Image (cartoon, rainbow, N blue to C red; front, top):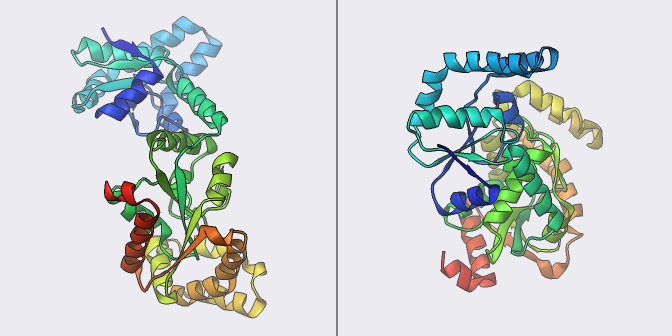
Length: 351
């Protein structure tokens, strides 16, 4: 018989061992919000879920259960096979620990596959996320990678994370790169999903001496950073990275690859065009349409993004700012590690 476990049990399992959590809700529900790190093995497709739901409302519970069983029976071999491919301990969940997760756990268990079921499902997880955010606590120091657009802050964060430094990627969680073009080529997240990923990361690093983050506005795409975390980030040490213009343009071209979505870049630029001096604005528009991206980006940096960053930098206390002037990305990474070793010698030494 499968075992019911609490969210607290699941969080411990995730922390202490390799563990696969499986969302058995429909693909649409899964993509809207789920427990971070889960995979999707749905009991019903989106259309099947809608059909069963309609039966439940219009005919009754028993008719819906019968149709659900009929649908599930037809796909059992494929469903079981997906579970058999997973060689780690498994926990299934649905919206509130109801029929879908019970059905999934029952049939998998009958085939001799050990599985747990999460009590309360995603709803219990969401309640935990809300309660954690209401505490408005994050003990570690925050060290912010800041600087002008194109200084490769996100890439540097991930390079540092690969070396073992604690890091929270706010842009990655938001599904947005933070600029006017930040939504292009990525899938934006809703607030609930952003908060789920954020709380999971905060939980992971709550005992760390410091955590690296990127300098961000309070709003990133469609989501908003919790006020307590944003305020702490703004009052923390800011490592301002400086790179030559040529390197910054190259970073942006590598990250955004505008030639893959030329029309979207022109459309996004239209939203800020009026904020740029008219002759320059017309030149950028012309360069984008001619796919002369190198010059367009350099003009955007010089006449739009850099002045905005200069204004933003002025709000930080001087004693919180450390300036890193680097010749290239490798140099920037080396200098950041040096600064971190100066700030947290024992912690960095143990990485």
